[in-house]
Image 1 (cartoon, rainbow, N blue to C red):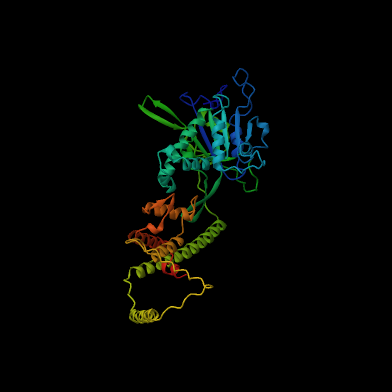
Image 2 (cartoon, rainbow, N blue to C red; image 1 turned 90 degrees about the vertical axis):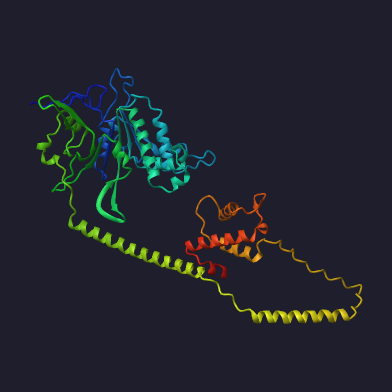
Length: 478
């Protein structure tokens, strides 16, 4: 049986000719791989050149590339419209006064890209491409952190991270990618690779950067490779492991009455190009008779890789052991402080001090009696009367003593306050406000603090210091 020729009708990226004749749509394609594995070239081959005559945008590029790393600057001959994202973003980050330009953050890139893509008219480009997707992906997460209310989350839920945050990231990603796909026939993105870790230990394998949502939303996700052969020669075109695909044909078998699902992609594509994908759509692989180069064979580690991995594991284990020991010592210190603070305080024997004070008082009384029995000398005109000693303002019943207030102030000064926009003084102010300490013009009036409230704050502050590994007694002794 002669093979079907993969023909792409005008204005359509993928051939409309699988076995059943049903249309094929590949809305989102992702590609990952090492440096120089062919990720960028693959995207430029999806819809090269310009729109044909009669098209609404005839003569205009069929592909727009959002180049985040200047990786497509040498591919101008592809006919694609290449946008230098960093340069475009920086235009809006230049200070008009001193002409200084801010370095774009991932959030800046995300917001600019989203705004620019919104300006694209449907049909203006057959293929939109972001190369690579990493900064856009990170910027999306930052956007959610800065706008929790838009995703029915609180700031506390966002700061804690976990399932709520990443659930919102995934959901928003799907919305963004659906919007991108609606602007063109195929949205294509690339992602770099990174070392895979299990806990703090590298597995010796590599994995794509970015959220799992990128793979979830993709109709086809490829891991491109251009490995040298035994002679050290690197192939011109990459091979690809099909990591995820939703491309299949559905055929009804009238004899058996069963519905057959026919995969359109093999586990591995020997020559990974858009043309090869079109050929597989026209002539699906026979999974019962896959060719050797269509089978995926997991790669094993060589001896050098194993030695390097063992060395890394040993290093990580040593660092983990040292960290665990430090954590144990820190915890033991906290427990010791808690035990010491929970022990009843012994009242010192002050009999000697009391007796000495009583004797001193008797001497003062005797001197006073002697002074009253002796007439005071007439003051001379030259001598001025000594100013009377200031009488301390009597403390109102129930208010905190000066010693208690001083103790509270010392303890508060030792707390490690969270990093952020608030200063330590503002954290203290907020703590006292929550405790119900009277205010006047936004300032705390500690002289109006009750002893009961002061004791509660001292107790609360002491517990916080112990949790932070600070000894309250040592702090007061300084």
